[in-house]
Image (cartoon, rainbow, N blue to C red):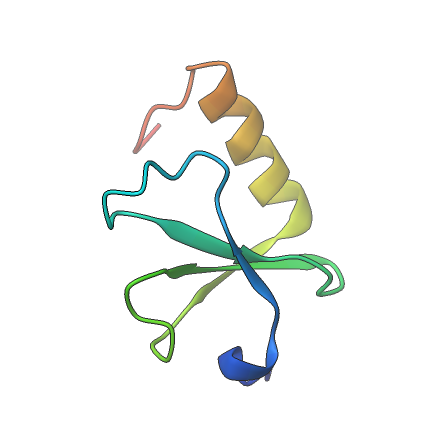
Length: 69
């Protein structure tokens, strides 16, 4: 995926607490979900396959996410 992060439309996670420890996601990119640190808007970002991101969110919301599992 070759996108300039400054040309994408980012939004803060609805779970962001406003304490500066926020994630931003970019909707509308086909088949993937870009994710970045909100404090570094010109820095690198991670790209997750849409299905993987959806599964991660489902696990977090259900409080079943276990890093490294």
